[in-house]
Structure formats: structure tokens, C-alpha cells
Length: 106
Image (cartoon, rainbow, N blue to C red; front, side):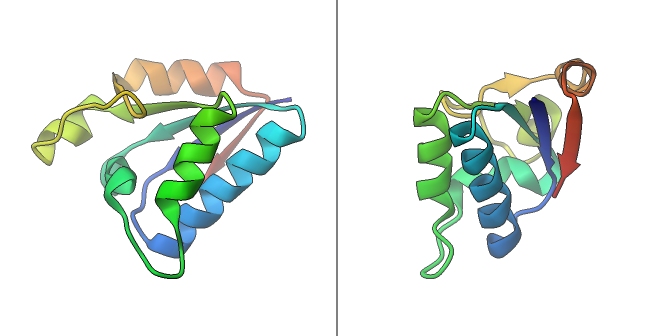
């Protein structure tokens, strides 16, 4: 199954669970793409003693997951895209939704 995940928050536990879900789906043979928008574009910088978001993001990428980040949302925060979260456009989100069999939003 093709799963699209949209993350719009930077709440530690929610993002941690979203990325755990994404990793579990990949490990169970699904294709997974994550699109970050709004506060979600900040997930690479989240550090928390209990919810290790960075570890889940790293595992997702190492397991061949794809992450896209809204360029407008990045720019509004004076952020640049990264190798893990390249600058994308809203049309990329639309295309992910069209591509996916199921879309989950956190």
C-alpha cells in the first residue's frame, strides 16, 4: 500500500508517533511519503528527552522513506531545505495525495 503522511505540528509526542508509524509502515513493506507543512517543517530540530524525533526521522530516511517539506512554510521561518527535508511545493503535496492509497494527517 502507498501511504502519504502529512505532519502539521511540532508537538514532540505527536511527531514522534507519526514518524514511528511511518517507520513501522516501511518495515512492513508499504511505500511511505511524508509531507511537512506549517510547524511540521521544524521536526528535524526537535529534541526531547522522552520523544526522540530525530532518531525516528533518521531511521525513516535510512529505511528509504521520502520526506518533503513545504517551501513556503520553511521560508516563513527563515529555514532552508535539507537533504532529509528538501524544499517542496504544494503541488508536491497534491501529487502525494493523488499517489497514496491512504493519507494520514498528524
